[in-house]
Length: 137
Image 1 (cartoon, rainbow, N blue to C red):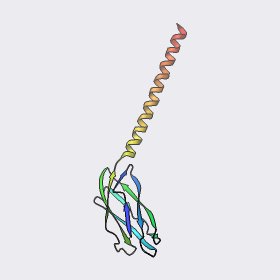
Image 2: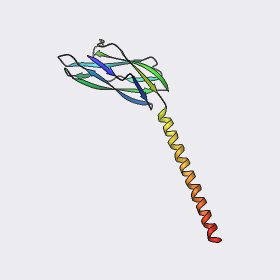
Image 3: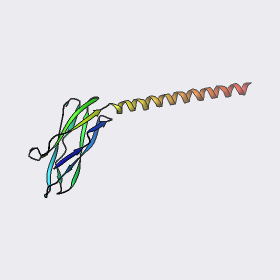
Image 4: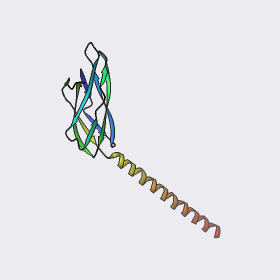
């Protein structure tokens, strides 16, 4: 059994999923679960995924759901376990970068929308004032 994951993952919002690949090199199907821990569980939390059955000689992708409570860089350790909790692989270290980009992006969109509405209203007002001046002159 092997577990493969990207060495670095960026979260652009408060929640995100990222994939890990479980490969069964055995001759029989295996039921395993992906275990995740972090060096800062207050900053990022992972929801334990359900056990997955991986057929002999096949691979399966497991999505790890993460919830971030703040921005920064967190190191996560991921490994495979049997359903009874016996470790099957060594830790794979993943650097997870958490940002509040989701909140920042929404703020930028809202501010941009306000600027657009205000500038359009001012332009309309200016054009109407000019048209009134042309009509009287």
